[in-house]
Length: 186
Image (cartoon, rainbow, N blue to C red; front, side, top):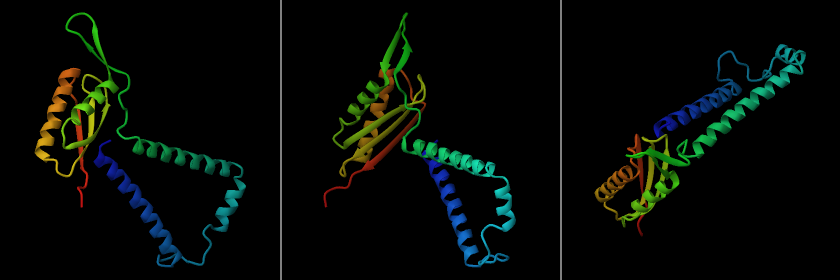
């Protein structure tokens, strides 16, 4: 999922929670027509039906709560885990003659980080490979010094990605570069 998709998903979740809270507040203040703020939250008929269905009603509520908690945990783990499906192991390419060339994905990512940090304007870099070869997705984050020239760094990143593609013999299907500028001295 893209960054825009993540923002949209969390915006929808936040709006649903705010709408639910606003409806509950309006009902408790008597601002909703047809709702008595002094009435019980659950009617006597609903409470008696709940008790008649025991223990299945309690079990159903527990299972529903567990499913919602599991869905929330999975969503949170995906959000905090960074780009999903990080490429592990090796990139394997057929050779020009018989045989294969195998390159460790972590070694390739580390080499690209070293190449990116060769520029004096780049303080730190992080690279994540996702997807499948021969067209993996490439996620790059560079932290720039306050005085780094944007055009020079942009060209340096482009050249580093070209060298990466030539070395690994794989053209990235998707390239996502995030640049953060660190604040300069006061």
